[in-house]
Image (cartoon, rainbow, N blue to C red; front, side, top):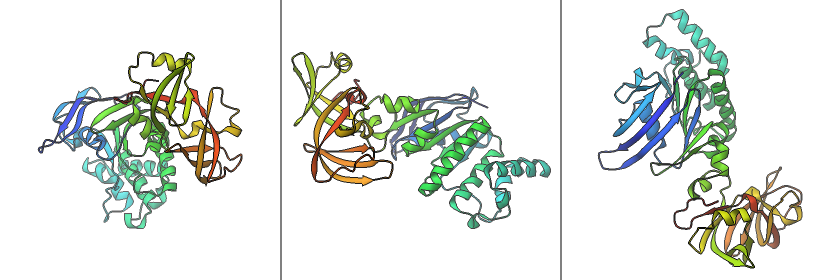
Length: 367
């Protein structure tokens, strides 16, 4: 298989729009790398440059230690799976999967065996005589995967392949692609705007915004140690809760104060921001780290504050609770031990060890 190195790559269009800015990504051999970010962040453009479907303004792309900037897409030994499947409607499943092999002048027996093996792997061997219009969305996506597999490429590229599927099928296909990666032991680059796909599938996540890489790391590193406020807000569902407030010292204890909320920071947090110059700071906590104070016995380091309960959404295994602290709307995820009452105040506990602090000006993580 192959390593993919994207080195100081830029993409500037003729109208001057700088879509990708000095991007550096290393996908190790057999690694599953997910590029994630909002629409227009440059992730698909980056993938298309790896595929050879977009020209590079500057920088280098290497596949298996070979610079491929000027190599035609068909000669890069990659296979790409698109969002819209890109199947030929007049061809059967077998013909779609076999098409690239026929172009290579491979003999019919070998083509038949390769298509059969890929179809069995994907559970579509009974569909080989059907045409795309006779298939469901999930089946079409499997055909698109099968067409890529039979080529035995060094690198698989996925451009939002699950966007057109319903929620249940997306979950199923996520597992399918992860299983495929494990079985094929191939390098994969995968583009998505869905942070759940990124968290569940990736060995390495690349978070992008406005053409710039914000952070590269394992899913848990990106989740637990976001480099900045954008990453903290983009990764995690529901999004992290953030308060902009002031630091306040009393009796040698450092506090974060937001309206009527006063939270004592830990010694570790205090040490981390000892050189911080601003009086204001951004204090963030994820919904799953906020507890009903009546059921917070699992928290070792906790701080309690009052909140107003506006809406409760029972989800079976948990409650999604929409609260207001002062004038700030926040979201919490409670265990289903007791249904919180709406339109009433309640005490909530923060797992203070899980809170994150960000620079109010640069939005970089301080703790």
